[in-house]
Image (cartoon, rainbow, N blue to C red):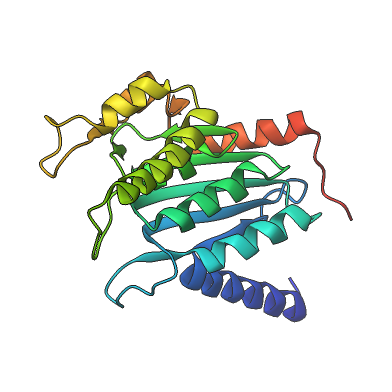
Length: 236
């Protein structure tokens, strides 16, 4: 390898490492120039309009949304892999990310690792195909609010509207039954904190939320297969 090529390669690796550190994203193109896959990680708490403290691991929606728009417009990216290990977070930001992923014209696959809780559930099901590792968890629970809440009927109607948006999206992008999903949300004998249900690995598949139990190997293989099925090729 010439010094010039070596320098270019080092610079490319440094840029990739910086991008991963700042946004949790990378383009996996070293081994197969015909199928460039973009990796997006949803880690920690999904941050909305308010900045969280510096001690929290967060995913910023202002990083994810522009990247998804750029992916859709790119002729170099053929597929998207979404890795999730999130406790949930801002409802509006989470739904915005899920809607963007669902509307991509390119193949998408998600993989739930440690967990995909709360508003992380819509993101996990927004892809064309979803996986969860055997020890991965998903927490299904009703919408929660922080701060001052006005105790009037209109407030609870608004809560229900938000909840219907979330359950509608989830059921529209997976095999889960709406009635069963709402039962899981209102379960009071599982969680120590108010209500909801924890689904581990295979249980999330049995409930129709996730497509299959598997790890990164299956997720990558499935994404490559979807790229072939879609007939998407890189443009020179």
